[in-house]
Length: 262
Image 1 (cartoon, helix red, strand yellow):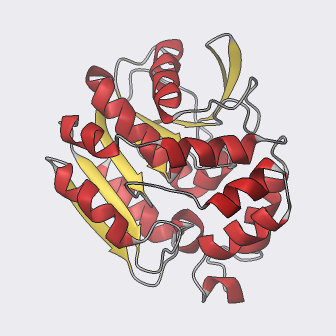
Image 2 (cartoon, rainbow, N blue to C red):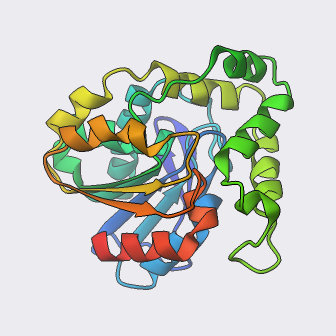
């Protein structure tokens, strides 16, 4: 499905079902240098179980046109504009990593548009090392190798994908390689510069679900504790042995948690 948002074309995967604004809507927001495909299993499941699904490609990502937006604030406002374009009054937002920051910000500053938020792999702050930012600014392929290595638990890097025939780390790297030059750097810089996450969390009044990986070294669970404390209505699910790439390493556990919450 394509929607006109802020003068550009936005692609949103609907889970194989016709879009119906009358149904409860769930919007999936991906992380840095990713696209809607990272939500394939979870979005499709909800679409076939009574939800309206929009798994979006953010501007400049995947099939969406325009430039990648440079701040979490701009991305949160873009999500509100997406809801306008879809004719949806309010929705549940599900975000991973950068997408979690976007969902949090949207719930705080657009409260009438957001009924619930699910934050996967969140951290506050979500700082990025200077060396990694330098590599991404230069579009150095070593950045992709580092991110792939940090995104998956040690066990997952040995193989054993829950989806037969899929190579988790290879697929993740290829997805990042498909992005236009500069997109990864813009996304990571947006994470790095997001300094008011705890202020946003204190403003959120809707229910929040946090899904953490116990082996996440990109956004360690300890870095989510202040965020958890700041949210007024929250529940936390920790997936044992899982890294930052939660939807790939533990697709069924993530699906089940979202199905109970959304």
